[in-house]
Length: 275
Image (cartoon, rainbow, N blue to C red):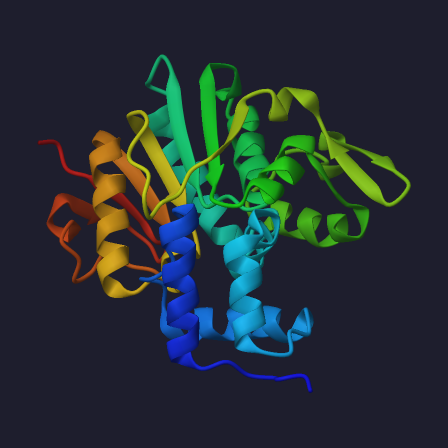
Protein backbone atom coordinates (compact mmCIF):
# COMPACT_ATOMS: atom_id res chain seq x y z
CA UNK A 1 0.00 0.00 0.00
CA UNK A 2 1.35 3.42 -0.94
CA UNK A 3 2.42 5.53 2.02
CA UNK A 4 1.71 9.23 1.56
CA UNK A 5 3.75 10.91 4.27
CA UNK A 6 7.15 10.74 5.93
CA UNK A 7 7.92 12.39 9.24
CA UNK A 8 10.19 15.32 10.01
CA UNK A 9 12.56 12.93 11.77
CA UNK A 10 12.72 10.70 8.69
CA UNK A 11 13.42 13.73 6.48
CA UNK A 12 16.26 14.64 8.84
CA UNK A 13 17.71 11.10 8.44
CA UNK A 14 17.61 11.46 4.63
CA UNK A 15 19.36 14.82 4.72
CA UNK A 16 22.15 13.33 6.85
CA UNK A 17 22.44 10.39 4.42
CA UNK A 18 22.79 12.78 1.47
CA UNK A 19 25.39 14.84 3.33
CA UNK A 20 27.51 11.85 4.39
CA UNK A 21 27.36 9.98 1.08
CA UNK A 22 27.25 12.76 -1.52
CA UNK A 23 28.41 15.92 0.27
CA UNK A 24 25.25 17.98 -0.35
CA UNK A 25 24.32 19.71 2.91
CA UNK A 26 20.62 20.56 3.31
CA UNK A 27 20.60 20.09 7.08
CA UNK A 28 20.34 23.81 7.77
CA UNK A 29 17.60 24.56 5.29
CA UNK A 30 14.33 25.88 6.75
CA UNK A 31 12.48 22.80 8.05
CA UNK A 32 8.95 23.52 6.83
CA UNK A 33 10.01 24.18 3.27
CA UNK A 34 12.33 21.20 2.88
CA UNK A 35 9.90 18.79 4.59
CA UNK A 36 7.25 19.83 2.07
CA UNK A 37 9.52 19.29 -0.92
CA UNK A 38 10.89 15.91 0.27
CA UNK A 39 7.36 14.68 0.90
CA UNK A 40 6.29 15.89 -2.55
CA UNK A 41 9.04 13.79 -4.17
CA UNK A 42 8.22 10.78 -1.99
CA UNK A 43 4.60 10.92 -3.13
CA UNK A 44 5.34 11.76 -6.78
CA UNK A 45 7.62 8.72 -7.16
CA UNK A 46 5.13 6.53 -5.26
CA UNK A 47 7.48 4.82 -2.84
CA UNK A 48 5.59 2.28 -0.69
CA UNK A 49 7.74 2.91 2.39
CA UNK A 50 10.30 5.26 3.86
CA UNK A 51 12.82 2.37 3.97
CA UNK A 52 12.62 1.90 0.18
CA UNK A 53 12.87 5.63 -0.43
CA UNK A 54 15.95 5.84 1.79
CA UNK A 55 17.58 2.76 0.23
CA UNK A 56 17.11 4.17 -3.28
CA UNK A 57 18.75 7.47 -2.32
CA UNK A 58 21.71 5.77 -0.60
CA UNK A 59 22.33 3.12 -3.27
CA UNK A 60 21.52 4.94 -6.52
CA UNK A 61 23.65 8.03 -7.21
CA UNK A 62 21.50 8.91 -10.21
CA UNK A 63 18.38 8.96 -8.10
CA UNK A 64 20.20 10.91 -5.38
CA UNK A 65 20.87 13.59 -7.99
CA UNK A 66 17.16 13.68 -8.80
CA UNK A 67 16.51 14.10 -5.06
CA UNK A 68 18.90 17.08 -4.93
CA UNK A 69 17.37 18.67 -8.03
CA UNK A 70 13.81 18.21 -6.86
CA UNK A 71 14.26 19.67 -3.40
CA UNK A 72 16.10 22.77 -4.62
CA UNK A 73 13.73 25.53 -5.65
CA UNK A 74 13.94 26.80 -9.23
CA UNK A 75 11.39 29.56 -9.65
CA UNK A 76 12.55 32.58 -11.64
CA UNK A 77 11.60 34.98 -14.43
CA UNK A 78 13.22 37.74 -16.48
CA UNK A 79 13.31 41.18 -14.83
CA UNK A 80 11.49 39.80 -11.79
CA UNK A 81 10.48 42.75 -9.57
CA UNK A 82 11.12 45.39 -12.29
CA UNK A 83 11.78 48.18 -9.77
CA UNK A 84 14.75 46.19 -8.48
CA UNK A 85 16.29 46.23 -11.95
CA UNK A 86 15.43 49.91 -12.34
CA UNK A 87 17.35 50.60 -9.12
CA UNK A 88 20.35 48.60 -10.39
CA UNK A 89 20.24 50.60 -13.61
CA UNK A 90 20.08 53.96 -11.83
CA UNK A 91 22.24 53.46 -8.73
CA UNK A 92 24.67 50.60 -9.32
CA UNK A 93 25.62 50.57 -13.00
CA UNK A 94 27.04 54.16 -12.96
CA UNK A 95 29.47 53.03 -10.23
CA UNK A 96 30.37 49.78 -11.99
CA UNK A 97 31.12 51.83 -15.11
CA UNK A 98 34.20 53.27 -13.36
CA UNK A 99 35.93 49.85 -13.22
CA UNK A 100 38.14 48.64 -16.09
CA UNK A 101 36.84 45.07 -15.61
CA UNK A 102 33.50 44.30 -13.96
CA UNK A 103 33.15 41.00 -12.10
CA UNK A 104 29.66 39.94 -11.04
CA UNK A 105 28.55 36.82 -9.16
CA UNK A 106 24.94 35.74 -9.59
CA UNK A 107 24.59 33.03 -6.91
CA UNK A 108 21.67 30.58 -6.96
CA UNK A 109 20.89 31.59 -10.54
CA UNK A 110 18.56 28.66 -11.34
CA UNK A 111 17.79 28.49 -15.10
CA UNK A 112 19.36 31.88 -15.77
CA UNK A 113 16.48 34.19 -16.68
CA UNK A 114 17.64 36.87 -14.22
CA UNK A 115 21.24 36.50 -15.36
CA UNK A 116 20.27 37.29 -18.95
CA UNK A 117 18.20 40.20 -17.61
CA UNK A 118 21.28 41.71 -16.00
CA UNK A 119 23.34 41.07 -19.13
CA UNK A 120 20.78 43.17 -21.02
CA UNK A 121 21.17 45.99 -18.47
CA UNK A 122 24.95 45.88 -18.96
CA UNK A 123 24.52 45.87 -22.74
CA UNK A 124 22.31 48.96 -22.66
CA UNK A 125 24.73 50.75 -20.32
CA UNK A 126 27.62 50.03 -22.71
CA UNK A 127 29.35 47.85 -20.09
CA UNK A 128 28.83 44.29 -21.28
CA UNK A 129 32.05 44.16 -23.28
CA UNK A 130 34.14 44.61 -20.11
CA UNK A 131 32.01 42.45 -17.81
CA UNK A 132 32.10 38.83 -16.68
CA UNK A 133 29.07 37.31 -14.95
CA UNK A 134 29.66 34.13 -12.95
CA UNK A 135 26.29 32.37 -12.71
CA UNK A 136 26.26 29.54 -10.16
CA UNK A 137 23.80 27.05 -8.72
CA UNK A 138 23.95 23.75 -6.84
CA UNK A 139 21.70 22.15 -9.47
CA UNK A 140 23.67 21.20 -12.59
CA UNK A 141 20.63 20.48 -14.77
CA UNK A 142 19.22 24.01 -14.37
CA UNK A 143 22.66 25.40 -15.22
CA UNK A 144 22.56 23.46 -18.48
CA UNK A 145 19.25 25.13 -19.35
CA UNK A 146 20.78 28.51 -18.57
CA UNK A 147 23.73 27.84 -20.88
CA UNK A 148 21.40 27.35 -23.85
CA UNK A 149 19.80 30.80 -23.42
CA UNK A 150 16.54 29.24 -24.62
CA UNK A 151 13.32 30.02 -22.75
CA UNK A 152 9.62 29.40 -23.49
CA UNK A 153 8.22 31.86 -26.02
CA UNK A 154 4.96 31.92 -24.06
CA UNK A 155 6.73 33.88 -21.29
CA UNK A 156 8.04 36.67 -23.53
CA UNK A 157 4.96 38.90 -23.28
CA UNK A 158 5.25 39.04 -19.49
CA UNK A 159 9.02 39.44 -19.68
CA UNK A 160 8.61 42.32 -22.13
CA UNK A 161 6.29 44.12 -19.68
CA UNK A 162 8.78 43.57 -16.85
CA UNK A 163 11.59 44.88 -19.06
CA UNK A 164 9.74 48.10 -19.90
CA UNK A 165 8.86 48.68 -16.22
CA UNK A 166 12.56 48.21 -15.43
CA UNK A 167 13.42 51.12 -17.72
CA UNK A 168 14.15 49.10 -20.85
CA UNK A 169 15.54 51.14 -23.74
CA UNK A 170 14.97 48.87 -26.75
CA UNK A 171 12.36 46.62 -28.31
CA UNK A 172 12.64 43.58 -26.02
CA UNK A 173 12.15 41.18 -28.95
CA UNK A 174 15.42 42.46 -30.46
CA UNK A 175 17.27 40.39 -27.83
CA UNK A 176 16.03 36.99 -28.98
CA UNK A 177 15.07 34.93 -32.00
CA UNK A 178 11.71 33.17 -31.89
CA UNK A 179 11.65 29.60 -33.12
CA UNK A 180 8.39 27.66 -32.75
CA UNK A 181 7.72 27.51 -28.98
CA UNK A 182 11.04 28.92 -27.82
CA UNK A 183 13.02 32.15 -27.72
CA UNK A 184 16.81 31.93 -28.06
CA UNK A 185 18.68 34.92 -26.62
CA UNK A 186 21.53 36.58 -28.49
CA UNK A 187 24.99 35.09 -28.32
CA UNK A 188 26.61 38.37 -27.31
CA UNK A 189 24.62 38.22 -24.03
CA UNK A 190 25.38 34.59 -23.21
CA UNK A 191 29.01 34.99 -24.23
CA UNK A 192 29.70 37.04 -21.11
CA UNK A 193 28.10 34.54 -18.70
CA UNK A 194 30.01 31.64 -17.12
CA UNK A 195 27.61 29.01 -15.77
CA UNK A 196 29.25 26.82 -13.12
CA UNK A 197 28.23 24.58 -10.19
CA UNK A 198 28.70 26.08 -6.73
CA UNK A 199 27.27 24.97 -3.40
CA UNK A 200 26.66 27.94 -1.10
CA UNK A 201 26.62 25.62 1.93
CA UNK A 202 29.97 23.90 1.43
CA UNK A 203 31.96 25.79 -1.22
CA UNK A 204 34.08 28.88 -0.59
CA UNK A 205 34.76 32.08 -2.48
CA UNK A 206 36.34 31.81 -5.93
CA UNK A 207 37.04 35.45 -6.87
CA UNK A 208 36.56 39.05 -5.74
CA UNK A 209 33.51 40.85 -7.11
CA UNK A 210 32.07 44.35 -7.43
CA UNK A 211 28.49 43.05 -7.35
CA UNK A 212 26.90 39.89 -5.93
CA UNK A 213 23.26 39.11 -6.72
CA UNK A 214 21.52 36.34 -4.76
CA UNK A 215 17.74 36.66 -4.78
CA UNK A 216 15.17 34.47 -3.06
CA UNK A 217 17.67 31.82 -2.00
CA UNK A 218 18.36 32.77 1.64
CA UNK A 219 14.65 32.48 2.49
CA UNK A 220 15.05 28.69 2.26
CA UNK A 221 17.92 28.63 4.82
CA UNK A 222 17.72 28.79 8.61
CA UNK A 223 19.29 31.77 10.42
CA UNK A 224 22.62 30.04 11.04
CA UNK A 225 23.07 29.14 7.39
CA UNK A 226 21.91 32.57 6.24
CA UNK A 227 24.63 34.12 8.37
CA UNK A 228 27.28 31.75 7.00
CA UNK A 229 26.35 32.53 3.38
CA UNK A 230 26.24 36.28 4.02
CA UNK A 231 29.75 36.12 5.48
CA UNK A 232 30.84 34.31 2.29
CA UNK A 233 29.35 37.12 0.21
CA UNK A 234 30.94 39.80 2.40
CA UNK A 235 34.37 38.15 2.08
CA UNK A 236 33.88 37.86 -1.70
CA UNK A 237 33.09 41.55 -2.27
CA UNK A 238 35.63 44.25 -2.95
CA UNK A 239 35.49 47.30 -0.62
CA UNK A 240 32.57 49.47 -1.83
CA UNK A 241 31.08 46.48 -3.68
CA UNK A 242 27.32 45.89 -3.87
CA UNK A 243 25.16 43.05 -2.53
CA UNK A 244 21.62 42.58 -3.92
CA UNK A 245 19.08 40.24 -2.27
CA UNK A 246 15.41 39.28 -2.76
CA UNK A 247 12.49 41.40 -1.61
CA UNK A 248 11.89 39.31 1.55
CA UNK A 249 15.57 39.04 2.50
CA UNK A 250 17.64 41.33 4.70
CA UNK A 251 21.01 41.94 6.32
CA UNK A 252 19.37 43.22 9.50
CA UNK A 253 20.34 41.28 12.64
CA UNK A 254 23.12 39.38 10.86
CA UNK A 255 26.85 39.30 11.67
CA UNK A 256 27.71 41.35 8.55
CA UNK A 257 25.10 44.12 8.85
CA UNK A 258 27.59 46.63 10.33
CA UNK A 259 29.76 46.31 7.23
CA UNK A 260 27.06 47.44 4.80
CA UNK A 261 24.86 50.46 4.13
CA UNK A 262 21.54 50.02 2.32
CA UNK A 263 21.05 52.22 -0.74
CA UNK A 264 18.25 54.78 -0.77
CA UNK A 265 14.86 53.43 -1.76
CA UNK A 266 12.91 50.27 -1.08
CA UNK A 267 15.07 47.76 -2.92
CA UNK A 268 17.26 45.25 -1.07
CA UNK A 269 20.62 46.54 -2.31
CA UNK A 270 23.52 47.26 0.05
CA UNK A 271 27.00 48.69 -0.41
CA UNK A 272 29.98 47.40 1.52
CA UNK A 273 31.92 49.95 3.56
CA UNK A 274 35.47 50.87 2.67
CA UNK A 275 37.68 49.05 5.19
